Length: 262
Image (tube, rainbow, N blue to C red; front, side, top):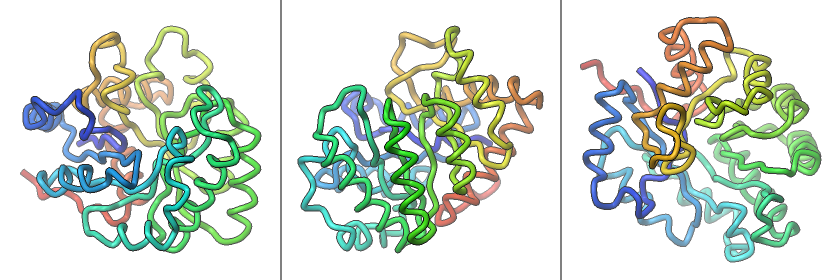
């Protein structure tokens, strides 16, 4: 089986056919999905989807694009919301200096709030990092020194130093359809350097559809294309990569329950 560790099933792209999208994922061997929160104030909609499907879990958190809109969200609030049995992660939170949609100070403040919640709950922090490698490494190193917390660098598209430092700090690294793009040689090299026991796969659907689906709306069923490329760069079979990334998922997302064998 495969797990799509990061998708956005609450987005309007899926509203008209969510049942079919999830059915196609199951048919493709993707037995679990985590639909990721981008705004705590819209968390009820995310949670409702997770509650509606046995194979869907969710996170709670604020995307860095929206950090300045939700600075009033406290770690206490995140911890409380994360008590729901379907909530298996905190985030996504982080730093995005590519779009810079929120002031950088607000992004950093939001990230630290989410780190505190991850530390207290011991649920994994889903980290969004784009064009912010130095600041991200500095914050993660400082915060990890104040108390360990589980985390993963999602949809990895940063430089090799952030991947290396993340692994040193105990983080996992998740790869999306970007890994399959023709011009992603450096990302594939970085993926090859990440230990097998720290790898996850995701779609970030509806974005970033992998080859050969590029240009289409992405969906969880396409997780297998990224897993296949990840297997190739590590020189293992697709079956072995599926097994490994699934084991890694349950180790990191320890609150998620394995589906019953069919």
